[in-house]
Image (cartoon, rainbow, N blue to C red; front, side, top):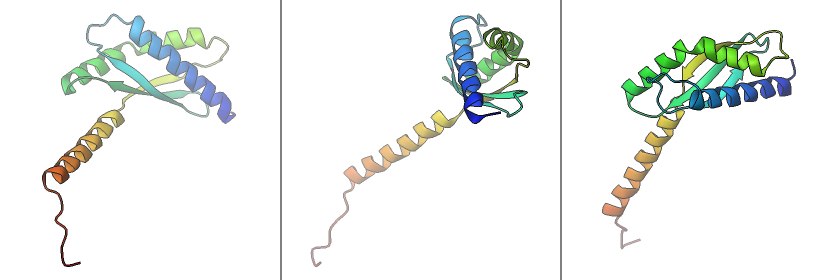
Length: 127
């Protein structure tokens, strides 16, 4: 299948799931979750859904458990939107921790800058 078509399907799935997670799921375990990306297999049988969850480790586990429990409903909503397709991909939910990694790198860089301000390098006067 053409790459462009796969990307269109992935974008549609991302839009639908983002909307459903934010507005339709009533599970109290599901906190602030964002669909950050979707990768669809070439045969359209599988879709890996990358989800970023705000909160501590326990909140993330609870949110992912709630989303796993709602996978059937999520897949049905995707099927409603992709009604022209013969198959609806099986949804595989994956916690996206790239935002956490970015925040960690930013914190490390900020700490290094703070240390440099506190202890400026001494220039050798003989040079």
